Length: 127
Image (spheres, rainbow, N blue to C red):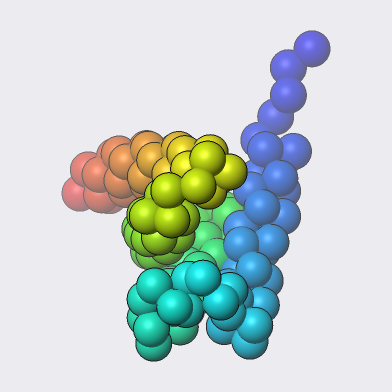
């Protein structure tokens, strides 16, 4: 049985929408440890999460590469920033969480590279 692109696409839409929602929540209710470590930059990371998630969700929902191409770097940077802040607390639980968030950020970066290849191919075929 072959699974078509629809289930994968809608799972990405749901995931990106959850990330955008997390960004809105992080801006409204910043984590005290992150806010203490980064000051007002906590709102920048939350904005990256919200805007990146919204752009990527839109791109996945409409099956257009441009949304993910623009949103994924913001998401990756946001997860990377949260990972660094968590790792800096040097408690074992925080380091474990930092590894998970950092790994997820790298997966998003890899997805961005895949979308960039699609963009290059689409541009080449349009010529």
